[in-house]
Image (cartoon, rainbow, N blue to C red; front, side):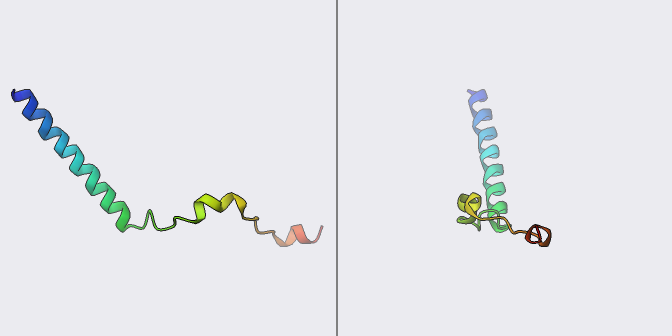
Length: 54
């Protein structure tokens, strides 16, 4: 029975760690751009000045 309590406490600590990590990443702006990654491959690359002269 004591092993069960130990596992519950450890799982709650791990869950709290992931919750804090998620909140930290949201506050840092990790999930702000939802549109661009899905269509990035559709955008043309910017051509440099050397490409226009050829």
